[in-house]
Length: 238
Ligand code: SAH
Image (cartoon, rainbow, N blue to C red; front, side, top):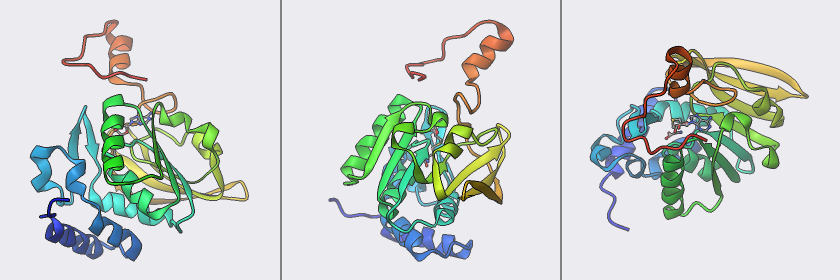
């Protein structure tokens, strides 16, 4: 592999995460190791270790490192879990999960992003990841139950299907709220009952799906009665 010129930048990013209150050493050491610059578009590599989200194309973003660290820490992974992720995006969060849990099932709505993530994760040697194109708000019933579920886009409410697919004793983390701002919630299933805790305010791109937000094309159809072809819109909705 070519020499990694980002080692120092990654170390600084981790120092910053520590300063911001992330203290799980396993999470920090995995983030010090994973090459985030390979998960962002080439022209943005120099910004890969700033603590900010970055565009990854198709109107989507790779989440801010602090939020990724916070969510991962809150999952309290022990190493043996089966994890469901909704919103693969770049695959960066997926790689972190793959380092800390047994098997990862990740669902991405957009075909092009799913392909990119699959390719990157394969290249980096993660054999315990399965990426599927589909509507993650329906979960992955054939593989349920999951010990952990993580949703990396905003939802109007927690979908019943995801709660159902969470194992007893499991943890689910999701941004819930409005289309443009949410609160990060941690849900814990204890003998079927729900305990929940709000972690912090956040801003994620919307999860679009049956139990998520309607897509913008269908909103336009609903309000204006027509659908304008998206520019360069080769993206498939599923
Ligand atoms: N964890 C990703 C975040 C990507 S942003 C990263 O750090 O790169 C959220 C992603 O959710 C986007 O890629 C978007 O296309 C995807 N998404 C939106 N609605 C979805 C749905 N119903 N099912 C699965 N993925 C969805």
